[in-house]
Image (cartoon, rainbow, N blue to C red; front, side, top):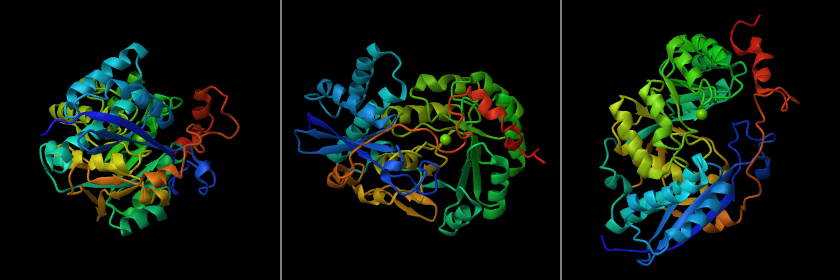
Length: 400
Ligand SMILES: [Mg+2]
């Protein structure tokens, strides 16, 4: 590979609309009704090649972090991916545990460096990750209603997820009824800090007859005591990790056998460099990867598909389908979805070109908001524990 030096790092931050089937927007219509932002990053080189990456973890803040890291990277050899990853990590140390925000910035730049290296070598990115163990990876969609589940299955999707807490057991049973026994079903409780572990156990036990592919985030990501309780009391595979930022964050979950499925976010887990390491550690623990993508744009999805077609322990990838209609204008190239599977592009690098004009026409306006579902109206200021206890009768199937 001919040496090439980084000459410029640019952020492309945009306001993205909400997927129509989610509760992320009260109206489902206006782009400004959602707080969703996407951050794409381009890394230019003196060889004329430009790599593309994506970073999440609070994109409006991550964009500033990327710009602040840029001076440590411009002039450096773009091919030294691991060395530059360590350089960025050390640069963040003085700011404390920067979590998914810091790793979101590293993620965006790291992804672009992998794209650059694969372009420079003239191969699709998956070739750098060891080649393919499978030509395509399965994906699942979110379905808020049994009708949405039936429509997804009719389009060839073979796995469906329901989420939230209120009436979740009833909704999961209704979804199983709608999609039948041969479609994989998952349930995501979103790990809210106000869900008591005892309630999570009650929900998990009620879901056991559905033979879920996994129960996701039954308790908060940092409530290890709660995870241990659910692990001991619920006979379902457990998934989590979308809020974790480092290999070290995953250690207690792997050391104690608390997770069966790891869900690092392809936009905020430090990029392909750290994702590949996590996949190896997971393999040693007989654990699979099912990366989180719920809030991500299409660049991170392409990177995830390259990785998941390469590693031996890929389970499934999350996908918003349908998504905001603007998503289809972000890229040329990218992944192809067919019969519930996503195939990696055969073109060199990530295999995509960013439509920066379209992105520029949708500038970021805001990137924070309150959940529009799952709360008791008007009670945002209450102790979060009250939020779960008040509608306790509606959490499981014990309601009259
Ligand atoms: Mg989740």
